[in-house]
Length: 196
Image 1 (cartoon, rainbow, N blue to C red):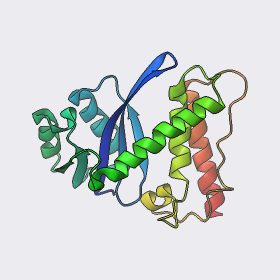
Image 2: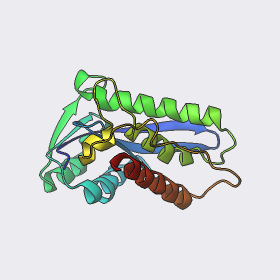
Image 3: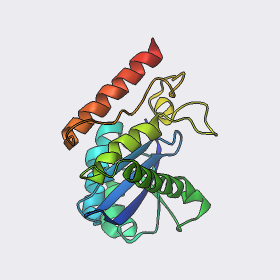
Image 4: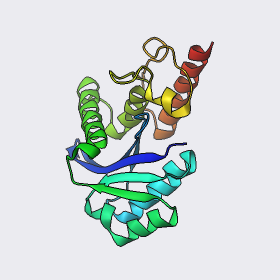
């Protein structure tokens, strides 16, 4: 179970006809990342994403680190964390303690730009999100001998380079449900190959 989570809110403007408000969450021990789309940048949307998505899937935390963004220091957010017995650590933006999530946000935005440049025919750039998360989760870093997903879930992965490939879709643009199903199938295939 993860004990310490770094979070940040970010907004990407004027990407095609869309804009993106999202919460990015990064586990401190593994670097495992999740991105949750938000309807708006309110504290209510933030707490709903944490509760309904991260806590429901991975359990409660002991510590949550964030910068001093407005939504992250309001009394409603502090009450939400207190109700789950989570200690909130606030850092100033670009402080070394928050570099983990800041650098992850930069990598994520750069990945979005690369995906858009490589495949501008996609109707919605939000469809790239699952591809980016999956690729990030199975990529070894210079500081870790294993992939973030392997460290986070406690599985030994031998190699992510050959076992998992994000294949482009052909024909019609897939729905979000089709993308999620496709990603799940590829992740299952990855773990089957790694463990056999």
